Structures are given as structure tokens and as C-alpha cells.
Amino acid sequence: MFQGQMMAGRLTATFHDYYADLVRYLTRRTGDAGRASDIAQETYVRIASSEADMSAVENDRAYLYRVAGNLAVDSLRREYRQSTWLSGEEPGDDLVDPAPSPEQVAIGRDDLRRLDAVLDGLPPKARLALLLFRVDGLSHAEIAARLGVSSSMVAKYIGQALRHCRDAMWQDQ
Image (cartoon, rainbow, N blue to C red; front, side):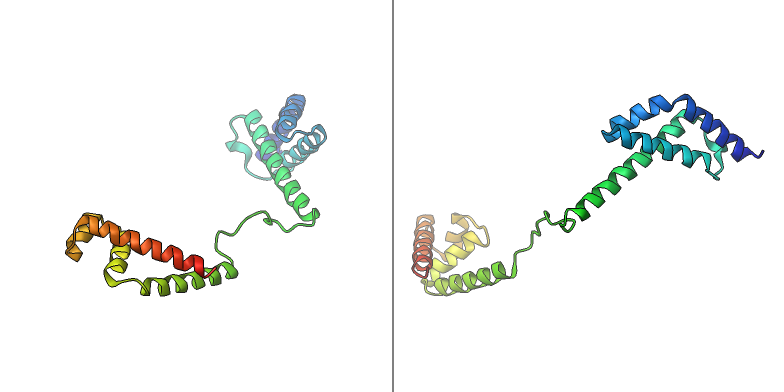
């Protein structure tokens, strides 16, 4: 008998010694005693027929539980895939694509065109004050320095622009 067969024999003996504990462990992992028994038998087949070099195994019990745990995870994944396929739904139907739909893109472009036309209807300083404030993020003092007006005048320009945009956008709807 060569080394791999002796090790496999040692592992099958460990399997028999810990069978009841292994089934309890697998039952906790899977939530189903019947499935746990099936996985335990699959574990036995796997270790009994293993042709790998088993001399690296230092702890037979830990190796046995690792093989069984991996098989339990594979079983649960396989069941999930099968239940998804058998439910008649495509996997991932519940996932939402964060990208806007073509309809939303078209509506957004129309709104943007309308807003651009509304902004064109503003007096130049009010338009510039609004864009510097909302788009560029400048403060009232920075906008006042650029336009050569007071901060209170900037506030008035922005208020005028916002009212104009609100009224124009509501009229179109």
C-alpha cells in the first residue's frame, strides 16, 4: 500500500470516528439534516477516492471538516442557482441598473434645452451671477468682485434669475 492510500485509509477512519459530529456540523451549516447526510457521504467519497498527496495533511479532523464545509457551500450555491432558474425568472431580475433609461435621457435633454432657452431670456448680469453661483460655486462676494457690484446686488440678481427660471419652467408644463 502506498502513502496516499494509507492516508486515505486514515482519513476514512477519522470520518467514521466523527461521522455523527460531522452531520451535526453540516446540519447547522445547511439547515437540513437530509442534505447534511448527503454532503457527509459526498465527503466520504471525496476523501476515500482522493489521489492527491495526503502527506501534507497534519490534522485529519480539520481536513475532514474543511472538505465537508467546502462541499456544503458548493451544495448551497448549486441549490440557489437551480431555484433561481426553476422559478422562471432570469437571475438578477431584481437588480436595478443605475443608468437612466433612454426615455429618462430624452426627457433630461429636453429639460436641459428648455432651461438653456430660459437662461438666454435673462439679463446678462443676472444670468452670469446665477451661473457663477450655481455652476462654479462662487460666493456672493467673489461674484460681486467679478461683476463690479455689491454683494446685495448679487443676491438680487440670483433671486431674479431663480424666479424667472421657475416661472418659465412652470409655464411650459
